[in-house]
Length: 328
Image (cartoon, rainbow, N blue to C red; front, side):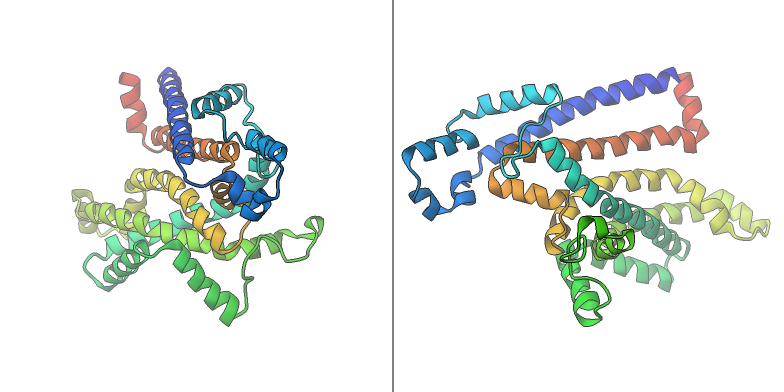
C-alpha cells in the first residue's frame, strides 16, 4: 500500500510538470500563429468601420498589445488558483464551456474507446490464434487498411452509406434539428452519436488488434500451450490466451485515450458534433487563448490519468507485480 501511494505521488508530480509544459507549448504555438483574432472574428469590413476608441477597446479585450509573457503568467496565476479564465468567444467562464462540451463528448468518447478496445482485442486474438491462415490474413489486411485511412475520410464514407444512401442514421449533430433540449431522449442522443463513435472506434482498433495478434502468437507458441494440447485440453484459446495478453491489451487500451481524443477533433468537425473537439477548433481559429489552454489542460490530464489507472491496474491483474513492488 505504501509503495502504491509513493508511486501515485510521483506520477502526480510528473503530471503537474507535464501540464505545465503542455500549456506553455500550446500558448507559444498559438502566439506564433499568423491569424489576427480581430480580423478573424470581426472581418476586415467591420474593422474598417470602427472608431479608434472602439478598436483600442477590442485590442485590449483580445490582448493583442499585451506581451506574450505577461499574458501567459497571468493565465498561469489564475490557473493555479483553479480559475481558467473567461472564454473570449463564448463570453463565459472556460470551466463552464469545457463542462458543457465535455458532457456532450463524454458518451461519444467513452463508447468509441470501449468499442475500439473490444474490437481490437477480439480481432487480435482471432488473428494470432490462426496465424498464417485466412482469418489472420483477413484481419491483418483489414487492420493495415484502416490504420492508413484518415478518420475524416472514413467518417464521410460512413455518412454517405448510412445517412445518404440507406437513410437509417442522421447526418450529424448531437440531437435532432429543431428539438428542445428537455425533449431530447437518450435514444436520440445515442442514435446521433453512433456514426461518430463507430468512426473513432474503427480507426483506433487497428493498432490494438495488430499488437494483440503478435502477443497472441507468442502465447500460442509457448511451452504451456504445447503441454495443454498434449493433455487434450479443450478451449485452449479462451482458457489461456486472454489472461496472458491482458497486460499488453490494458496498456494499449489506456494508451489509446489520446488517439480517441485527438481523432474526435476531426470527427466532430465532419459530423458537426458540438463537443470538446469542435470547441478546440473554434478556439484555435478564433484566437481564444484561455479556452484553448483550458481544453489542452483537461485533455492532457485525461490522457495522463488513463495511463496512471493502467499502471495501478497492473498489480490487480498480475499478483507477481504486487509481490515485486512489495519486495522493492
